[in-house]
Length: 262
View (cartoon, rainbow, N blue to C red):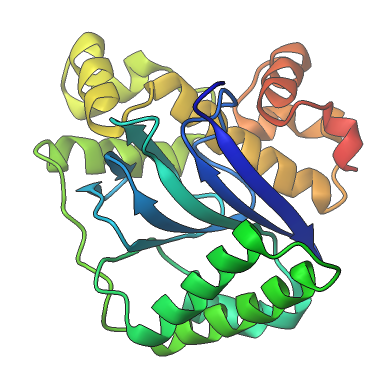
C-alpha cells in the first residue's frame, strides 16, 4: 500500500510497531495477546463491547487479551500509532492483573507515561543500533509499571444507544458460545427478529454476530489446545458439531492448523 509505512521490531516475545496508514493486513478483532496502542494522529473510532469512542491525538489504549475490539479508520493516510503486543510474560505476570485486566482509554496521559511513550516512539523511528530492542524492552517495563500506578486517568465506558439489547446479547453469547447456538437462538432469547439483531449488532460493534461468536470459540479452543487438549476431541466443547467446520474456522483465524499449537 503506497500510503502505508511501518517500523517493527521484537524482543523477548514483545512486538513493537510504529505505523502510518492502514495496512492491507486485517487483524483479528479478538486475539490471544495483550495490546497497548498509543494513538498519535488521524481520525478513528475505537469499538469494543462497552466502548464507542472517537479517538483524540495522544490517547493511550490498554487492551487485554481475548477482548473484542476494532478500529474504524476514517482518515487512512493520517492514521499514525505506536503498538505493543505481548503474551503472558513471566517477568510482568504479577503486574498484569493491575495493568491489563480491562480495557482502558486514557486521554489525559500523565507526564511520566507521555515521556516513556515519546521515548519509545523516538527509539523505534530513529535509533538503529544493536541496543534498540534492549532500550525498547527497558522502556516497556517502565511503561507497564506506570500504567499500574496511574489508576485514575481512564475514562468511563461510553455505552451505546442500544445498550440493553447489545449487553444482553453479549452476556448470552458469553454464557453459551461453547454450545452450537445460532442467530435465531440468540434472537429468540432477545425477543427480536434475527434481522433486527444482526443489523443492530453489526452497527454497534462493527462486526457480524457470526464472526464475533466464531472468534470467541477459536480463542477458547486455542486455550484448551495450549493446555494439552487434543484438537480432534474438543470441537464439540467449542460449539461445533463436526471437526471439519472447527478445523476450517481455526485455520482461518490463526493461519495454521490446530495441531501446530499442541
